[in-house]
Length: 482
Ligand SMILES: [Zn+2]
Image 1 (cartoon, helix red, strand yellow):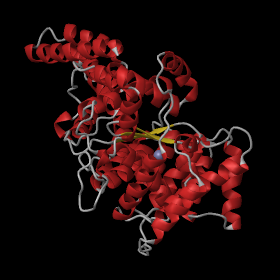
Image 2: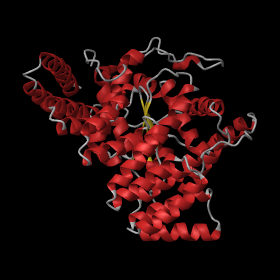
Image 3: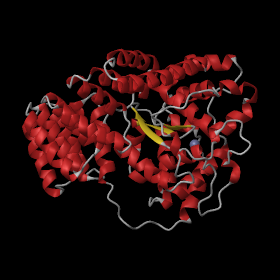
Image 4: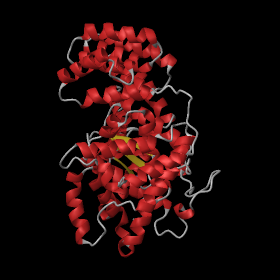
């Protein structure tokens, strides 16, 4: 593990040892990495290895609008955390169970079920802030070091297996058996002290970021209630790894009371819109969901009327009634002309109707208003490819890379645009990055070999892909040794 190769595409340059670095408050010093057996760099690699492995068994939500919403919310909290320079990465797992988890190095996963259970953006933020604090305080690493000092060389595999088990019990079973055989404490049990610390630092972070401190105890209560009302094994997984007791709720309530109540209204419409988008994406019963929205609107039973109407539009469109969906959408757009989410929904309906040039027109107009927006760019590039305009798409994608968007979707589309433009070695090279970002390192090696053999004509290409191949092969060897 110590010879693990640092990866080109992960901004290790940005890495700073900023753990436990008090900003303007008195923080507990135990988050400090001094004297730790696992270095911050190793921590990042543990998190990265986990993130790769997890993607082999768990499906992530691949909607770029939902993902960029979650990332923006997370980054806003990170900016106000005790480690604003850590390269956090937020991702959403398509899983109805209520759970969130944090891997060392800043990989924070949220199940779609958790977002659907949150009633306000502040509640969702409170869970993220809590998880961010587990990372900045190095809780997992520290309990691991404490319990398993004799088997540290295999720490990455161990912590990775623990985390996979936490995010997906089915996939974790095999990993757990191995762990138990080696005598490792095979569960993520945040101690009471760690939970208390994550609560108090998380709440401070929440308040500094402009959210309501009371959202944290309110969400805990909601989780507790949901486990009380759902009989059987429906205890939210979040409660298993982060046990919530009545005294913990009372403590959080007491702490929240010491913060002034925020009276300033924020625009949190995007939270409600993304929640409904996720609800429509997750449903197996579109007709039932349509009735749910209709009766919510009729009875005034909603938190945000625009979001409920948006949800209904998505359902109507998914059921194939594009004309009605478009008519309803236009009524929403009149109220909020520059809401990109509505514009993208309009373009989606046009695509579904087969009116591609109308959709492309919507993307092009909005690219001027929201330059380099991730969700918009991805949709626009897909349309450009269908129109046989790969060069325009490639230009937009390279701009995304420039602004630091290294999502697997971007790499996949770069491979497609390059292929369509006849740039064969580039196409393989980008496909290699796509596989790499998804943790499919073997496939990445295969593509890089193809890139090398296709770049015979260009010394520059040959050198570039050969060097990358060497790096990725070394990574593969290290991963197999873990
Ligand atoms: Zn916790």
